[in-house]
Length: 315
Image 1: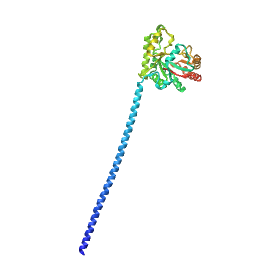
Image 2: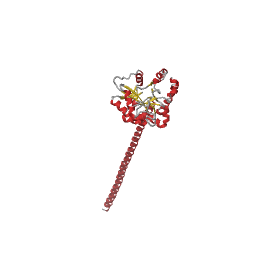
Image 3: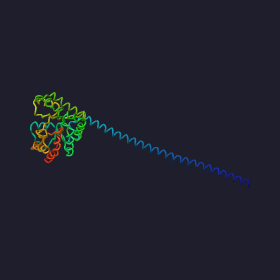
């Protein structure tokens, strides 16, 4: 009997030991599983972080590619030759060769289509040009500016910034000499071709400094007008060789004619000289002292708009 009790006790102890051992094993197993779950969570978290880093890197690389592509586009645009106007404003331009031909033949018809070229000589001035540009922008009209090198230099940085504004606003830029000095260009009223070329080349150089080395213009206007001087045949040959054109005018507001006129008189003079012409090239000035020209401009523009004219630039 006593022996049975001892055996029973041993079995109980053994069972208890087994249970404790199994419990320990189960705890260890659970701990292992929990550890693996925790490790998996950490791995997933790390993978998510790595994915985010990879996505951000990819986004930054794409942004950099876009920036580089935009820079290449800008550089390519800079390399393109610019003739007279910026590319976006070419839709307002007109072939100067056709205008030169019509003016030379006094033929101002245009197959029923009315066009007008507003042209301003002797700029850029720091007093009148800003007001001219403001009005043109307000009226949504483009013009051609015949620039004089000496006046650009006279106006310094402000004048150069105005040339950039003319260009950026879609107006055409043309050459009207450097000195505007008849004695240098036409001694004894006869063209001195070498002096003429040197004079105009000085203004060309200034324009390139302001608008870029790839800028050029095919359009010039002779100080005093082409028809006023002798020996111009040699200029014709030179311009033909360079694919350039001298453009005079067939209408004017009279701001450089006779006694000074007020804005109303300038407007009326422009209208009178333009009457009956389908193609009008109107001469005005935006140099110093021409404030009345600026005041007359809205009325002149209104007349041409009301009479069905299209405003174009000379290129």
